[in-house]
Length: 242
Image 1: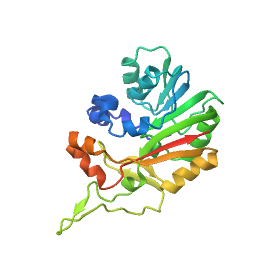
Image 2: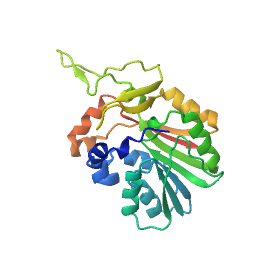
Image 3: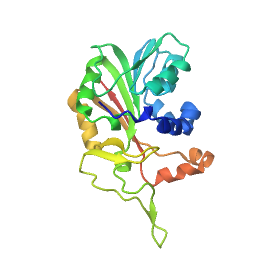
């Protein structure tokens, strides 16, 4: 079973105050780039894996999806999603992505935002998602960038000449990593970019697009704190087709 840190009251309280949870998709700088990878949603049956507060589940319905299944390990997340959704075509369910089993050809689109780096067995999950999708359908997701996860320091280091570096540790050594983010010992799983993409290929997916997200000039102008994201990629965005 995946670590359920999101039902830790202190963690959940801090998480709820993040800009992307307060402002929804407008508070997620990568959203325009991620959304651009989506196919036309009209009439599609979609699954939102690690749905959190349900922001994307609701967006999918508002943009034409026929039905949406949102799944999450956290009872607190599912409760909040249900409280803020009044659409009977969106079904929120409690589920562990380490063990979840979706029906064959049950969906025409699969999505996940910043969730898979919490999953130890990504191979199994990718095969299961492939099986759950209809032929020709799309799978789009974001994860914490492997370079960001392998960083040995939470911020870049500036030397005496003003040059910035972002220390990366044991990038080629995959497996469990622990970090302190809103709580101590949050468990994540480091995989290289190559491993992530090869898992998808072995599962039967065709890679259509890969984006190492960086904020635009306009985004930095509106939110100067995002300039730090130019120092190293924080998120990896992937679009694949079954």
